[in-house]
Image: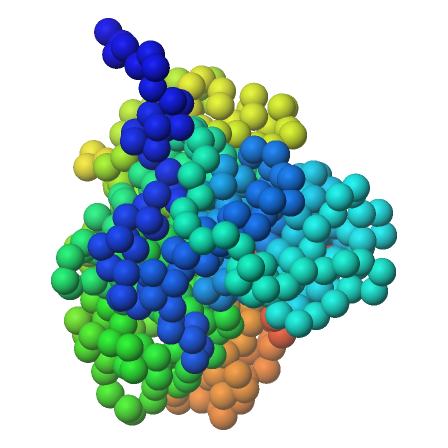
Length: 544
C-alpha cells in the first residue's frame, strides 16, 4: 500500500517525514532555545545561537556552488564553531568531514584529495596542515578560516564574517534519510585510511540509543557532559556530544586534556557525564590528590584499554555517585554497539557487555557460519548503526559486508547471556609455538603490574617460536617500585617484575618472552596504540 501524494511538492513531503541530524538540532532549539548548548572556554552558546549559526553557515556554503552530498572538510579542534559547521552540512545535504588534525600534512593532503574536497573549514592555527594539499589544489577551492589566519597565494574567508553576512532563516533543502551526513577516515594503523560514509538515520538512531543507554533525558533535568576527546573521531562526535545536543543537555568542551582543568570544570558545571581513556582517569586521580570526591558525576565511561582493578577503585572513590562502565565500538558502526551495564563492572568486568537495543551482534566462523555461545569467531553487526560503506573502495566494501553482516575484524565470543567478550583484533592475534595468544589478555595482566603506567603487547618475528610475545611498557615515573623496595626502578627491574607477574597469572605460552621499557607509546588522537608503529620500531628478536 502506498499513499497518493500527487500534487504535493517533494520538499514538503521530505520536510514533514524525514529523519535527519540537522532536524534533531532544530527540535532541541525550538524547545530549549535559551538553554546553554555548549560551554567553550569563556564562550557560552545557547541552542538558539547554535541553530542560527548552523543555518547561516549552511546558506553561505551552499552559495559557493557545492553540489548535493559533496564533502566539506573540517580541520578544527573541539569548539562550538566545529559543532555548528557539522550541523550546517547536515542541514544543507552536504557531508561533514572532520579530519584528524594530529596527522602529518602529507596524510591530510591524501585524505583531502581522496575525498575530492573543494571546501575546507580550518582553524587558523591548523592552516600549516594544508601545506601539502595546497601544492596541488583542486579547481574552485574554498578555504574558510575560523579565526584570523591567512594563506599565502590563496584567498580565504572568515567563518565569523560568513555567518554574519548570510541570510537568516532555516536551510530547507531535500535531505534523504539515507543521505551521507558524515565521512570520517579511519586511523589507518595498518594501511591507508578508509573514508567511512555514515547516513543521517545511522547518526540519529545511534545518538538516541546512546542517550537511552547513558541516561540523557528530554525535559527539565538535562545532562551536562564534559568532552575531552577529539570530535574528529566518532567516539566524541557520535557517542558523546551529539546525543546530549539531541536531548537538550549541555556540552562542556575541552580542546585538549589537562587533568586539573577537567577536574575544575567537573565541579564548576556540576557535570553528570564524561568519558576518558584509562590513562586520563589515572591522571585525574593523581591531580585530585586529597581534595576529596566529586559527587555530581553519574556516569564515567572509559574505552580503548582495560582498566586495572586498582585504578577502577580509585575512580569509584573519586566519583562515588557514578557508574563506571566500558563502552566499545568502531567508526564503521556508530558506537556504542555494545555497552556494559553497570553491574557488569563487578560481575563481568573484562567483557564488552551486551549489544545495544538497535544493533544485532553475532559471532561468525571463517566460512560465515554462526557459531555456538562460547565459541570464538569474528564479531559481526547488523542494524541502522552500520555505515553505508567505504568511500572509493569497492574491495573493502565487498569484504566488510560478506554474508549480510558488517565484519568488524574483532575476534571474540558471546556467552549464554548475550554478553560480548572481546579476544583481540584479528590482525593482532599472536601465533606462537602453535598457540594463539590474545594480546588483550596479556595486556590486562601487564597493566596490573606496579610501576607500569601503560603497555601494549605485540607479536614479533622469532626464529624459534614463529612469533614471540613482546610486552612494550611505559614506566610510571622513577619511583615505581612497590613497597618495600628501592626508591627508583631500572628498566631491567621493571621488565623482570612484568615477567614474574605474568608467570603467576598467565599460561606459559602467554608469558612475554621479551619486555621493553620505552618512554612513550605511539598513539592515535583518541589514545589507541598504533601497534604497527611499535612493531616497526623493534629489531627482529631471537629468543632461545
